Length: 162
Image 1 (cartoon, rainbow, N blue to C red):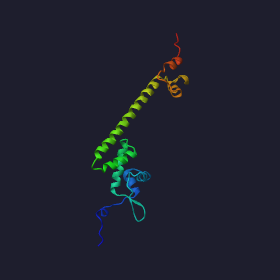
Image 2 (cartoon, helix red, strand yellow):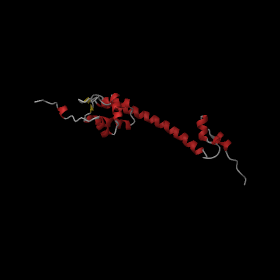
Image 3 (spheres, rainbow, N blue to C red):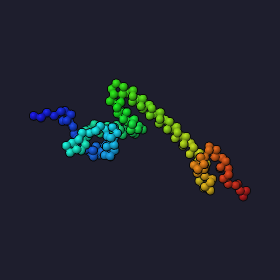
Image 4 (cartoon, rainbow, N blue to C red):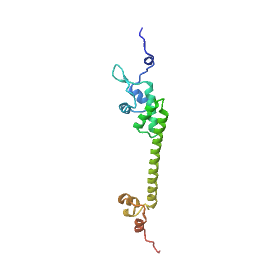
């Protein structure tokens, strides 16, 4: 009688196509994750094709959820390593997430400044008239300082007495 190890008895291999369908991630992307070390190299069947276990789908889901939270692939690799570290994993994960949150808050502050500047330009633009009177184009072309009043005064329509 041939004995089979428990992990082999329960191993239900999935091809890369099966894993792609199950996770919604392309086979090309799965191979990329494998090359980058985010997915362990799967065992190969007698045909030479990759054979993934059920845990691969869970790992791909982890990667996708971490990406949705704004983590880079490098950061996700760190999170995957930390998730296996029973000693200091939680502290490491919190530190990594705190750094990412600080980066996101910085990006939001930068985008808030862009939004405020663009909103003032859109508000100042009449939407008609000569191109040289468009504050949006002036700001893009000339670097448009914060004081748009000088360029807008020269473009103001004369008030008619009629």
